[in-house]
Every structure is written in structure tokens, then in C-alpha cells.
Image 1: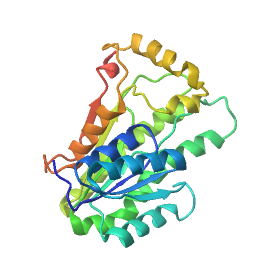
Image 2: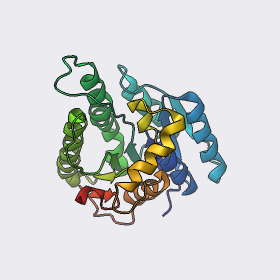
Image 3: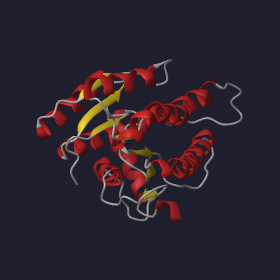
Length: 252
């Protein structure tokens, strides 16, 4: 796979799957626009990307839920590189809540980042991707059994699946593809949003692993390989696909 001359936007690039994907795109010679909210970690990702092939990424510290932020990201990317070939919607977060919580704050927060941002950013990128016949990769969790405390997350996951399938059909005639990469339990910073302390995160992952068919928590680098493959031209007719990488976790 060769991304020489191709411009790739990766959101959520300051950690986890987003950071791993950015680094792998860089290793395949992509020109990168990386976005995140943690400056220290985003700069670390940018440094690793530049060291891969010598291409310095456009590093954008930005909260994509803020007004006009998606427009700003697209404008800066096009001003710097002149085009957009690939959009990887990887920014996301997970929080626990339920119908018994009368506040809408958590629900609205999750919808804003996990659902509204991919929709809005895709809209903003489309005029440029129509020119390059590019593609979009949406990264969100694999199908899983519904569990108490994760009602909004379950709703968003199903909405993103429909967004991917319906958009792929709508865009196919224009030569633009959209696919989803859907990881299972992966070692990322999601647990921090569930108030899990750093010192017990490893123990928590060990406990999660014991519940999985493979007895393994997935590393973000493995998901990154699927993201880069899906975004490549290896399979030009790959469209509306749900690329599930979960070690069969969704089957039990």
C-alpha cells in the first residue's frame, strides 16, 4: 500500500487507534492532517509520523464539537496540502449513563462528538473528495450485546452503522467510498472516561481479557492496520463494509 501524494485527515489522533493509524499512514508515505484535544500527546504523534518518512504532518489542536471547528479543520488542510483524499473519523468517547439520569448533558456530549462530528466533517470534506475520488473510514465499536449503563453508546453505534451504509450508497455513483472499521475491546484511553485510575487500568484489561473468546485485548496497532487497508486502493469496490476486528467477542 502506497499513500504517496495522498492527503489523509485523522481525527482523535492524540491517542489510541487514531494515533496508531496516523503513524501507520505516515509509514506508507501519506501527507497527514492530524487532530486531537491533548496537545502533548498530539505532538508526540506528530513527531512519530515525521520520523517515519520525513513528511511533517499538519498538527491541529482542536475540539471538533466547537462551532465552525470542522470547517476550520478542512480549510487548514486544503490550504496546506491543496486537497483531501482520505478522512478517518476516529474521534470518540464513552461514558456511562441511563434513562434514570434526568440530565441530558452526557447524552448530548456523546452525540456531539461520536455522531454529529463524523456527519458534519464528512459534509465539509465531500466537495474536495469528489475531486480526488477519495474515501471515508468511520471507526466505531463492533456489534455487542446491549448492557445497562451504555444506552446512548448503543444508540450511537447503530446510528453510525446506518450512516456508513446509507452514505456509501449515496456516494457510490460519485466515486467516493465509505466504510467502517469496528474494533472490539481495544487497549485505548476509553477507560479513563469511565473513571478508571491509571494504576489499575492494566488489571482491568486483564479482567476484560479473561471474558473474551481469545483471552486477548486488541492492541490499537492491529486496528490501525485494518484502517489503512480499508482506506487504500487495494480493494476499489470495498464500499459500505463493516470491517469487524473483535476476536469473536460479538458472537457470545
